[in-house]
Image (cartoon, rainbow, N blue to C red; front, side, top):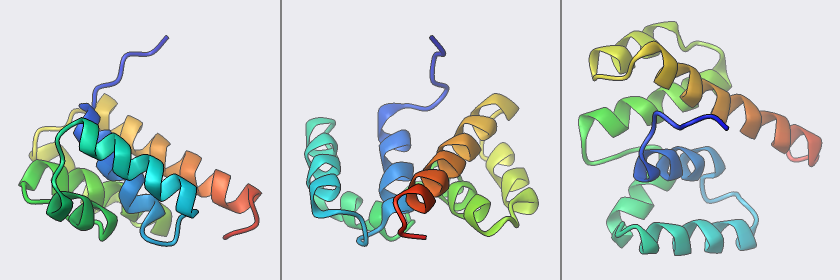
Length: 110
C-alpha cells in the first residue's frame, strides 16, 4: 500500500478539477459530500471544480494535474516543485491526472 504524499483536501481538489462540472451527477454529489466532510466550503468547492484554489500550493497542484491532460506540464511541474511539492508528490499528481484521462477515455467521454 502506497502512502499518499498529498493531503485529502489537495487530492480531492485535483479530482474535482479534473472532473470539472462535466462529471456524472453521482460523481459530483460524491465529491461534494467528501468535500463537506473534510470542511471545504462552497467557494472552495466551486474554485476546485474550476481548477483554482485560494492558496498558492494547491493552485500549483491543480495547474500540474490540468497541464498533464494537455501534455505541456514541464514548466508547470517546476512551479509545483518551487511551491513545495517534491518529485514523488508531483508524480502522484501526474498519476491522478493520467488515471482520470484513462477512465474518461474508457467510458467514451473523451
